[in-house]
Image (tube, rainbow, N blue to C red; front, side):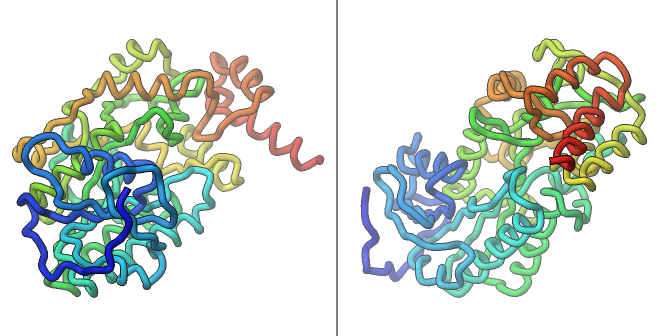
Amino acid sequence: MNTESSQVRPEHSPSGRPGTVVGVTGAAAGVGRLLVQRLATPEGSIRAREVIAIDREFADLRDVTWRIADVCDPGLVSRLGGIDVLVHTADDRSLETRPERRRRHNVLAAQTVLTAAAAAGVPRVILVTSTMVYGAAPDNPVPLPEDATRVPDNSEGLMGDFAAVEDLAERARRAHPGLTVTVVRPAPLVGPDLDTLLSRHFAAPRLLTVKGHEQHWQFCHEEDLASALAFCALHGVAGRDGVVTVASEGSLTQGEVETIAEMKHFEVTANLAFGAVRRLHQARITPAAAGEIKFLVYPCVVDSSALREAGWKAVHDNEAALRVLLASSSGKHAIAGRTLGRKEVTITAAGAAGAAAAAIGTAAAIRHLRKRGKN
């Protein structure tokens, strides 16, 4: 593992050519760590001249230069010297973080990274959001083009976080003409250790569906996201309007998913599904907002044309990604995005084949709330 040199390079290498210096925020864990590992041990002829790993602490990664920094601290600007492409992965997507705290971190971090990069003369920044910004709707075409209209959202859920970050990207492009900002939007992420609304959905007794509408499922393995970010950084892929989507090619129907997962579904009306989740979320029983549940019942499938035309392809297809998701959910129990305890699992399992409200987990959650209130 290299330590940071005090010498600042006087020049920048053009993006997409050998010799590019790539900085990665959030390098110690998650997608950032996967990206640093991929950049440090590249495949093919295009490689980074140096990988700058940026985080609040060191990690056991070799062949990289570490620069300790907090992405929410304006002092970050002093750590960005000599970087040609800065990939920002130091966001918070945890369902356990309080929404207001998560929003504050995600917005401040993105804002600080963009401002510091412009001040330090970094030519290009890559931000990571999600295909959630397209919105999930029963009439969405399958697939959506990358330049489809982004749905404005200011809710407290992750969709609102991503919308706020993309607003910052648009402002940065106008305020800093010398800074190229690329937004990478992955489909719902899966990985062995990821705890997401998606993984909790597949930890439920049955899969929720909305009457009259068939879901189409698309996934993105975290390793494919890291691969795509490395490809964008080293090959200069920017996409139309600075947007690139990352996903397994195509999609799976609801029936195909149920066959692979060996799970059954229960069908309810849209009003019942979203109304129940809204009440549970307002009571702070579940982290899932009604708007986020839409992504579990309505399609949001993308066509990753920019990466495909540039020569990149996901290693994991949707079926392989789904099997990783199922393995990560094995032995866990959740309803409407809320992890269940042992007693709640028993209650919910007993009612899963009965009334729709019980299947959603309302009964179990309300009992838990009442019990907590008596203590």
